[in-house]
Image 1 (cartoon, rainbow over the protein chains, first blue to last red):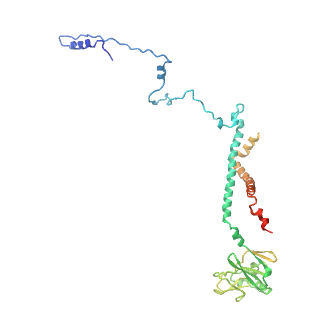
Image 2: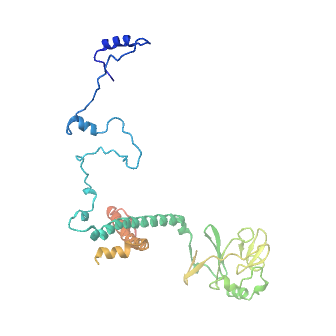
Image 3: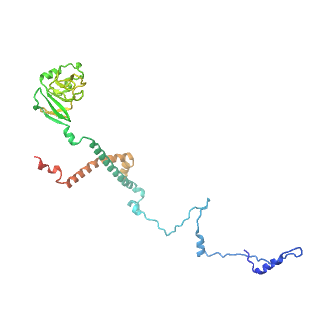
Length: 268
Length: 59
């Protein structure tokens, strides 16, 4: 901006310079040619250093040669030490890292493997306990078997026991009954089973006392065939427990049993 | 070849061998762990279990 050195004279000149045909305006004020010069501040001065720093809002210019990062950090920031997190073998300055690589990997995998072993043990234990909880408990198992002393049952007699909530017939058959049942023609039976398939020892018949018709309990030593007779609907079973007459469709069921000795019978 | 290298190459390098090693170790670990914990339990409960007082009640 130009600043007149003598403003009052300048204004006077303006009032006089209004020209017309008669009076040619003449230049009465000569503006001095102004030159401006700034002495560069010394490089280490406060001003120079403050100009070198970015100030105000930093904006990012876009361009191939323009970096978009302003680094504020200075050399007085320390690099953190990670020594607490490093393996001891990597801290040695006289050993190459590659030489201890396997031992470091082994340690890591050993830890992971130990976790795997523990997990496998825990999983197996959980599954085992769960599965074993589904099996019968000890009090149920104790009732599941019945022991019968065979010498207490005379020949020709049928004795009833309670086994798993159901009646169990144990019949000491006489020689006549055995030979009679052995000679029955299998083809003539409703549920064809030979006598040998139904007994382990011919003297002992072991059957469940549940009529296969509707579940009544048959009466021993009764009926047309000398075996069992169901009073509910008149089913006749022979001395081998086979259905011979009446509505029942199947022979009396033979449970699993065994003879641990000659004097003892275990059913179940 | 050092011990570490052998172990790494034989077991840990492949997932299959590592899983196999885990299962095999679990087999032995189970027996050892069960034995140790069972003995510890019986030691802590010395004199309270049926097997310890059986003699008093059975002829």
